[in-house]
Structure formats: structure tokens, C-alpha cells
Image 1 (cartoon, rainbow, N blue to C red):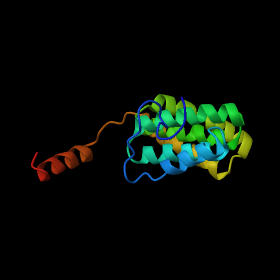
Image 2: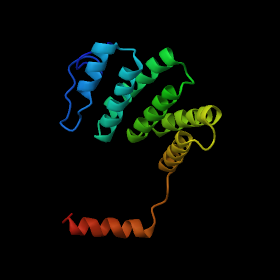
Image 3: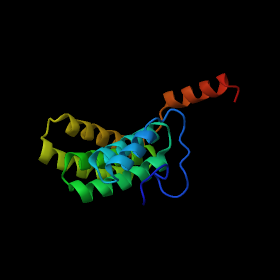
Image 4: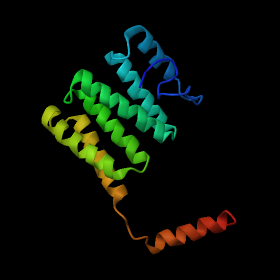
Length: 160
């Protein structure tokens, strides 16, 4: 994928919603510093987080995958920034409903962060929390009477 002005995700120009102000920074970093500079990669990672936060999960996953691939190639698989990209890809996958792949990535990231950063490092704790959340989201839970009551109440309140 060629990373350049507005074709961040490849192909046609990317329609960027108003709240997303990171694209100019990504384009400027790529133009001035180059596509493989750590600051450009960091801007791409931030853009992926912004896209995920705005509900653009598929675009976020694509951008995080590319950023992870590039950071792994450029910085190495154990660099803290590479681990952050892997963590962020897993978060986007969780948002996109791809729990199985997210859990696999989070387990691998947690093992690496414990080994590299230590068991009590804040990034390690963040990955542990994300893994627990993804596991909880992937576990089917029986819906109790409270849930059914709340659902009926909300349907009645909305006229449905």
C-alpha cells in the first residue's frame, strides 16, 4: 500500500469526517519525513485510533494492520511501538466484532509486554485489561430476567 496524501488506506481518496484532524499531520509527516519514519508511523497509528473511535472500524483495522506490518519490518517485532501497534490493532478488531483474532493478538502482546516491559508496566496492564474485556465480550452469557424486563420497558417507552 502506498502511503501518501489522502490515500492513507489505499485506493480512492479517504472521506475524513470532520472530527478527525489527524490526516493533515499524517500527510505532513509522510511528505517531510518519509513513509517509514517513526513519527509518520506514530501519526498513522493515532489516525487508526481516531477512526476506530468514530466507528470506522473496518478502516481502522486496515490502517492498524499496515502500521503493524511496517513497524514490525522497520523497528522489529519487540520494539515497544510495534507492541503498541499490535495492541491497537487488537482493540480495533474487538470493536469490529473480530474477537477471536483480537484475543490471539492480545495474548501474544501480553506475553511480549510482560517479558519486555515487566508485569506491572502501565502498557502491560492496559493489554491485560483489553484481553479480559475481549474475553468477556466473546463469552456468551445467558440473558437474565432483568435484561428481558429492561428490554420490554425500553421498547414500551419508545413506542415499539
